[in-house]
Image (cartoon, rainbow, N blue to C red; front, side, top):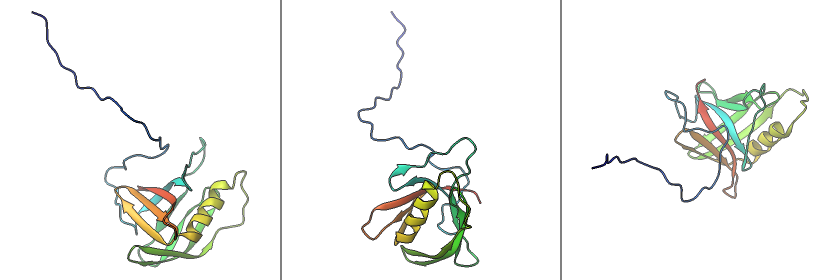
Amino acid sequence: MGDERTRDMLIVDAFDDLSPNESCGARGVTHDLVGTRWVLVRLAGQAVVLGKDDREPSIALQTASPRVVGFDGCNRLMGDYRIDGDRIEFSQMATPLMACPDMRVAEGLAEAMAVTVRWQVSGAHLELFDAAGTVQARFESRNL
């Protein structure tokens, strides 16, 4: 009689999409909207792909005051935020006026935050939505 062994296998029936720079989240990281560093992974439905020496664009909503701080891929950013349930509004956003070779992410993030009206945290991800319900930006949580 032969040696009977079984092996578990995964067979993929359908493949929808790849999400570069996204994971299921790091262990031990909080996923609260406020007090978490959120790294930008998708902008207007497109993956944010970083170069070898690029810093991660990110935002953090501070707990001590309603201030948002971060990095837009080119410059520091700062401003105010107001939360009411799942509604959020960013205002008085400012960045230094330093030009970078590629401003697409910085400009896209500024536009996304300007039109954001609602937020949702799902697992290790934060999504910002416009008034039509379209995801404008998707972030992944990281330790501060």
